[in-house]
Length: 347
Image 1 (cartoon, rainbow, N blue to C red):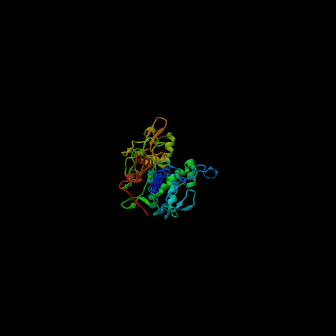
Image 2: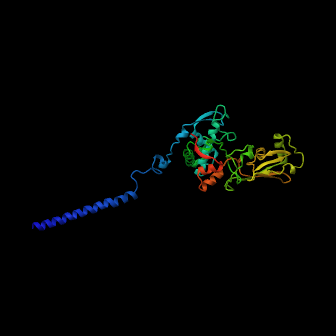
Image 3: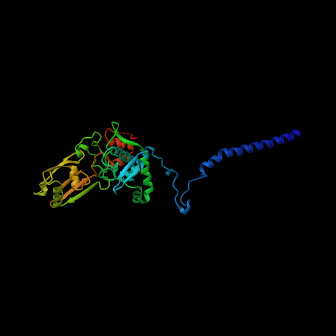
């Protein structure tokens, strides 16, 4: 009897052990799967989770801080008049927002931030402005826009674009474009007609890192090809005001001589009324978008067909964006447009 009872007790004990083992297996194997596939206990709030139905910022919206740029001050001569002091980081945000479309690729924006920082570093050591390091006039230094104005212009894209530009500045924190270890004049412009222009062809001075290179943008650029039409009297009036020695007394069909062109098609020089001008001077004289143009007299007016936009020297912004779309990094872009240069620390 005792043996029988011991047998029954042993069976019941074994069953309890098996049941416990099965329960433990469920805990070990089933529960983790539920945790992995289920909702997290603490999730970020979504639309409507905040009072008033506001959308909470995503967890990834927090951006790192650019320590090196925030440690540098910039005295900016604003277009409105007052001089304001900003951190380099805040100043560069306003430059990139003003100088390049915020819809551009991240690597293009980073290249612009790096070029703008380099340009600023060079001007900070100059005496171009007596009481300021730099001004906000693009015809003199670099364009600049306050954040509130930029965000108002961007409308519903304000947050996205603002963060894109902030990332571009932070990612390149303290970096610049260097040639033989020194910061360069990192010139940039909007779009090139297939090639950039050698600095010597525009300003007469050769610069080792400002050479002509291929640029990949084209007809996807807004207003890539434009046309300017001027009456003979308009051409005469504008020309004589700037160059009184020009002879524009004869047939308008012979006022312009045959131009000398760079390999990329930009006008290097041509004669106008017997006066030899650079392509840049003609561009400025008649408010053309670039010095890559042709001009004809159609019997009643002058027709200028123009390709690209800007002086053509240094980094093409639309070319940079095209390179970024094709997988180029900001370093690839900068070292392509600035011949023989490298990206390194400015501070």
